[in-house]
Amino acid sequence: MNRFTLTPLTRRFSTAICVAMLTTLAACAMGPKQAFHGFSFDGKSDRWATQVDLLEYSYGDQYRMVRDKVQPPKERLGPQSSVFGAMPIGEFLFVKWRIKATGEVIEDRVDLRNLLPSDMEKYKVTFVIDGKQLHVFLVTPKAKHEYDPPILKTTESRYLVTREIYPVNTHK
Image: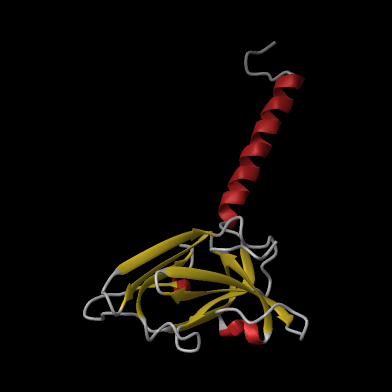
């Protein structure tokens, strides 16, 4: 037998390794999981913008439209933003803010990987700042009925079924 001839067993093993490598490369090439969904916040309607200055936020790190950071000479970000479309599902939410009355700067990073549903189609992630506490909500695409859960800290919960996912997870 020639030293470069592959035996049937070696050929199968080589094929299995090639298939595994190609599968791994294909998964990496696809990038982060994406869905048609939204990310928003509204400090005016949710009434937190009068008490705090938003300094930075990031819903994941894969999509520039869902993150922002104060750059001098600005002292704060705007209190509202909304993005809805096909985008990567954020693995975390980072928010940094300053309490106007004291000047204290607070930041919070929430790991979303186990808090969001596997199918994020038409859902929305939003947050509310209440003093030193960050509240994160999952807004469903379902219209709210009179028997649905009560209105939460976010105005999004007036018309759509909404669940708090942080600090208390009511989405199970």
